[in-house]
Structure formats: C-alpha cells, structure tokens
Length: 166
Image (cartoon, rainbow, N blue to C red; front, side):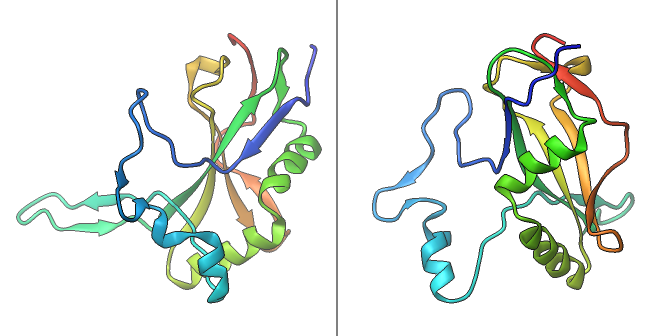
C-alpha cells in the first residue's frame, strides 16, 4: 500500500453550512467576539469549544441530565492523493500535537475532570475534503488522554485507514 504523510489534523474554525454566511451582529461581529483569544489571554483565560450531550430520562417530566463525556473536535484533511495509515501512531501523534501540544491536552483533561466531565477528542474528516473514510464514515477516531501513560488512547474501535474514495 502507498501511504502518505500529507495530511493535517487541526482544530476546526467557525464555518457555515451549505454555503450560508456565518451569522454576524453588525456591532459585535460573529458570536465568537466575546471569546477572542488575545482578550482572554490578557486575563489568564482561554476558551475551549466542546460538544456535550443531554441524556433525556424516560417518564414523567422528561428531565434531562448532562452526559459526563464531552467531545473536543479536530478535523482531518488529506493534502493530495494517497492513503493515510492511522495506525502509524508516530506520524498521527506528530500531526495531532502540531495543532494541540501535549501540555494543552493535559491541561484540558485536568480541567474537565475536575468538573466531573470526561473529555475525548473526536477526529472527523474535513467535510470539504474529497476523500471518504471506510464505510463513508465521518469520524476517523475517538481519543482519550491516559494520564498514567501520558498518551492519547484510541477509543473504542481499531484504528482504520482512509484514502480518497475508500
């Protein structure tokens, strides 16, 4: 097999779907105006976007409760032709940590766990990319930080390979 290392893993930015422009407030800009990195850093703060899920109880009242697992999204983008060997952990880790240093992973893990949440990184394919993952899935891999080993651990399915049209 012909594997390529010409891919990137990065934190997604604010986008609109279906070609629609991002909603903008004429005075304040888009909804991220209050979370500008430079402003937050001046106060010793940082913003961490994440996905959370509500577990809806069955029965009277349908009171929801927060699922303790949250997802921090990353996108996978292939540059050019070839197949990515996601099983090549040294290359994958190098790409992942180029965007998110291990110190940031450790800090976020500690913060969320201190608040009763279990963070996981979900790596999805860049929806604008011209490649498909096995079975046309949009999720490449789910990762959790293992403090005992100081590494990211795949969770729960085996590593898969992806290539254009595969």
